Image (tube, rainbow, N blue to C red; front, side, top):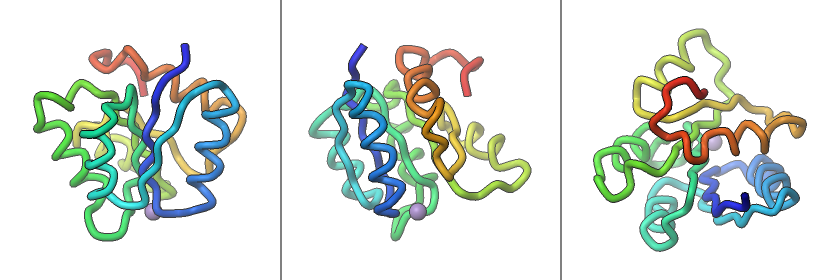
Length: 129
Ligand code: MN
Protein backbone atom coordinates (compact mmCIF):
# COMPACT_ATOMS: atom_id res chain seq x y z
CA UNK A 1 0.00 0.00 0.00
CA UNK A 2 1.43 3.36 -1.02
CA UNK A 3 2.04 5.66 1.91
CA UNK A 4 2.85 9.33 2.45
CA UNK A 5 6.16 9.46 4.27
CA UNK A 6 8.05 12.42 5.74
CA UNK A 7 11.83 12.14 5.99
CA UNK A 8 13.56 14.59 8.38
CA UNK A 9 17.30 14.41 7.66
CA UNK A 10 20.02 17.05 7.40
CA UNK A 11 22.46 14.88 5.45
CA UNK A 12 21.67 15.43 1.77
CA UNK A 13 23.09 12.09 0.67
CA UNK A 14 21.14 10.05 3.23
CA UNK A 15 17.99 12.02 2.44
CA UNK A 16 18.41 11.27 -1.26
CA UNK A 17 19.00 7.55 -0.67
CA UNK A 18 15.93 7.20 1.56
CA UNK A 19 13.53 9.21 -0.62
CA UNK A 20 14.69 7.48 -3.83
CA UNK A 21 14.17 4.05 -2.30
CA UNK A 22 10.75 4.90 -0.89
CA UNK A 23 9.59 6.46 -4.16
CA UNK A 24 10.88 3.49 -6.16
CA UNK A 25 8.42 1.40 -4.16
CA UNK A 26 5.53 3.75 -4.91
CA UNK A 27 5.51 5.87 -1.77
CA UNK A 28 5.08 9.63 -1.76
CA UNK A 29 7.77 11.48 0.18
CA UNK A 30 8.04 14.85 1.89
CA UNK A 31 11.37 16.11 3.17
CA UNK A 32 12.68 18.46 5.85
CA UNK A 33 16.28 19.34 6.74
CA UNK A 34 15.66 20.17 10.41
CA UNK A 35 13.23 19.53 13.22
CA UNK A 36 11.34 22.83 13.08
CA UNK A 37 10.68 22.41 9.36
CA UNK A 38 9.78 18.76 9.95
CA UNK A 39 7.13 19.64 12.53
CA UNK A 40 5.60 22.18 10.13
CA UNK A 41 5.38 19.56 7.39
CA UNK A 42 3.78 17.09 9.83
CA UNK A 43 1.05 19.60 10.69
CA UNK A 44 0.41 20.50 7.07
CA UNK A 45 0.61 17.06 5.48
CA UNK A 46 -0.27 14.58 8.24
CA UNK A 47 2.00 11.88 6.77
CA UNK A 48 1.35 8.17 7.36
CA UNK A 49 4.83 7.74 8.80
CA UNK A 50 7.79 9.91 9.82
CA UNK A 51 11.44 8.96 9.52
CA UNK A 52 13.63 11.24 11.66
CA UNK A 53 17.39 11.55 11.97
CA UNK A 54 18.52 11.93 15.59
CA UNK A 55 21.39 14.35 14.99
CA UNK A 56 19.86 17.43 13.41
CA UNK A 57 21.00 21.06 13.50
CA UNK A 58 19.14 22.98 16.21
CA UNK A 59 16.35 20.81 17.55
CA UNK A 60 17.43 17.16 17.97
CA UNK A 61 15.47 14.16 16.79
CA UNK A 62 14.65 13.43 20.45
CA UNK A 63 13.08 16.90 20.79
CA UNK A 64 11.06 16.31 17.62
CA UNK A 65 9.89 13.02 19.12
CA UNK A 66 8.83 14.68 22.40
CA UNK A 67 6.79 17.30 20.57
CA UNK A 68 5.06 14.78 18.34
CA UNK A 69 4.32 12.27 21.09
CA UNK A 70 2.93 15.00 23.37
CA UNK A 71 0.48 16.14 20.70
CA UNK A 72 -2.70 14.05 20.82
CA UNK A 73 -3.40 14.79 17.15
CA UNK A 74 0.02 13.63 15.99
CA UNK A 75 1.15 11.06 18.52
CA UNK A 76 -0.35 8.13 16.61
CA UNK A 77 1.77 8.74 13.51
CA UNK A 78 4.50 6.07 13.49
CA UNK A 79 7.89 7.67 14.10
CA UNK A 80 11.09 5.87 13.12
CA UNK A 81 14.56 7.09 14.13
CA UNK A 82 17.55 6.85 11.85
CA UNK A 83 21.04 7.40 13.18
CA UNK A 84 24.64 6.66 12.44
CA UNK A 85 25.39 6.26 16.12
CA UNK A 86 26.02 2.58 16.67
CA UNK A 87 26.50 2.73 20.40
CA UNK A 88 25.24 -0.03 22.63
CA UNK A 89 22.07 1.10 24.34
CA UNK A 90 21.12 3.54 21.61
CA UNK A 91 18.24 1.46 20.41
CA UNK A 92 16.76 1.21 23.91
CA UNK A 93 17.22 4.94 24.48
CA UNK A 94 15.45 5.66 21.20
CA UNK A 95 12.50 3.39 21.97
CA UNK A 96 12.24 4.71 25.53
CA UNK A 97 12.07 8.25 24.15
CA UNK A 98 8.90 7.29 22.32
CA UNK A 99 10.09 6.40 18.83
CA UNK A 100 8.21 3.45 17.32
CA UNK A 101 11.30 2.04 15.67
CA UNK A 102 14.96 2.43 14.85
CA UNK A 103 16.98 2.04 11.66
CA UNK A 104 20.78 2.44 11.64
CA UNK A 105 22.70 4.34 9.02
CA UNK A 106 24.22 3.82 6.55
CA UNK A 107 20.92 2.82 4.97
CA UNK A 108 21.09 -0.67 3.52
CA UNK A 109 19.07 -0.40 0.29
CA UNK A 110 18.08 -4.02 0.53
CA UNK A 111 15.38 -4.29 3.15
CA UNK A 112 15.08 -0.59 4.01
CA UNK A 113 11.65 -0.04 2.46
CA UNK A 114 10.35 -3.31 3.85
CA UNK A 115 11.55 -2.29 7.30
CA UNK A 116 9.88 1.11 7.02
CA UNK A 117 6.63 -0.42 5.75
CA UNK A 118 6.52 -2.77 8.73
CA UNK A 119 5.83 0.23 11.02
CA UNK A 120 2.85 1.52 9.09
CA UNK A 121 -0.38 0.56 10.81
CA UNK A 122 1.53 -1.04 13.67
CA UNK A 123 2.19 2.06 15.73
CA UNK A 124 0.75 0.56 18.89
CA UNK A 125 2.50 -2.74 18.47
CA UNK A 126 5.61 -2.85 20.60
CA UNK A 127 6.84 -5.98 18.82
CA UNK A 128 8.11 -3.94 15.88
CA UNK A 129 11.46 -2.22 15.77
MN1 MN B 1 22.16 14.31 10.95
